[in-house]
Image (cartoon, rainbow over all chains, first blue to last red; front, side, top):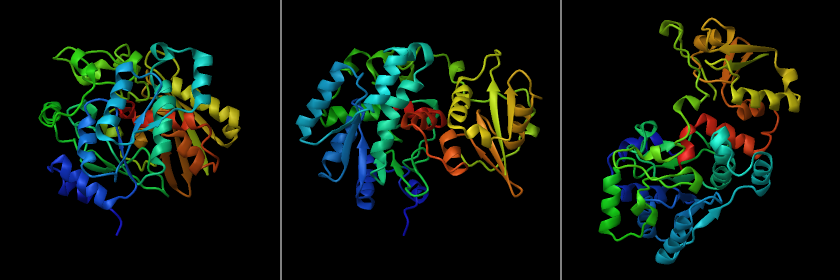
Length: 248
Length: 111
């Protein structure tokens, strides 16, 4: 019987992350954990208890902090697990750098660079698994407020290759993740001790103040108004807007 | 079959960069020959043809494509998906397809 993410999401809505992971590996043989080198190391710790059933990969953009590279190696040694590093297509990176330089994201926005250094390698990796695991949590950003524990992956599924996405930490807060890390003495990235709540590429990540949101530490130079794909139709009466069948 | 391409002008009067990228891909690939109509969604003018079509179809982003076939209308907000499913072409460069995925799922930069 085909896997039904919505049914599983309801069943595991309040479940402990370890139970979600156990269910995930029970249902999917080709399953991978995307590890960012940040506090999602808690998931690496949980996955390590399951043996080698879950592939672990990290998107090595080539622009990570030296501390993050050292941390990846530390995790590899600590758990004795393989961590597959996914690299961007060198030709695409070369073309970007040749045409726009090494810091085009400060001028043109980060999406072009992220697409080349993160999304394309991620897509390549996910083409070879049937499910993946992320560290996404509802408290990370307003756009993640509704993240379910299990979902059909909308971004990378294709008609011939449905992909399921597990977010075992969806219900946990940042504090719960850190309680876990401390309680189980899980190694963590030293950047967290310097005010980094979220850890991405070095040029695009900065420490944040305690009251600031995680995402405030990313792409801080971009105003919200620069997210230009939205169609701002505030001048149109709501009555005029009708639902349509959308294919994408 | 009728294909409409809707591109946007931002509220400050500048052209939408993503729309320009898609237009360039259509031009370079020759796919522009399959486009029957190009409409402008001008954020300064709710009555501009593209804005009215977006409102009618409930589309909240641009650029987008509308494919009318046999009385049915399908909306595509992802270029590579449109190119693959409607024009039967390839996805083009992997980096372009990745950019489309990110544009349609902006939260993915935060992985």
